[in-house]
Length: 224
Image (cartoon, rainbow, N blue to C red):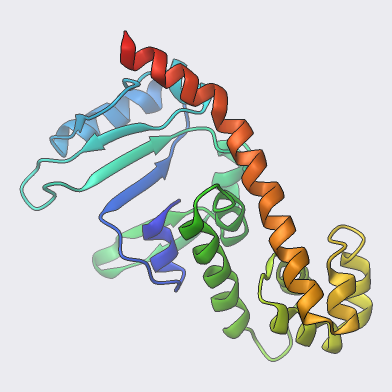
């Protein structure tokens, strides 16, 4: 669900971390503990690995020591802001096949784009790249779902203006949910850029509010 997923979706990012989202139940936690043991992974911060903390939305951080994985960090979560339950994430996942019959299960691109709406500058850059990469790999005749995704998530003014010119009626419909598209329909890139910045700031504030009580709880755990 993090940098490794971005790489597989074509928005290259260097990362030695692997971020995963898991189903938080007793059986799956036992399976995860066995996997962590095989990686010789140690928990490197609070909170410890427990359903209580995962279900609250905390991340649990590990560092691997198995030869070949040294210093790779593994971050585990079960609950994410701007994302549905694990079962829905799993149902909508993307499976990427690799050599030797192995495969990776990624959160879907629309879900990954939502997850990237955080307080961090680098996540907004990555979110923009992810949607642009999807847009530039578009088929000659994109479907309704693809058009709606681009109109809802593109953060590049010139691309939104271009899309609005090609599909004005659909853009007008989606503008009911994303009002800044009215600027795209008018071809006003400067006003659109300002509206995109405001939209981003709203999400940054929401992310700070979401994490505030969790950060407070982490501070208490550190002191204990």
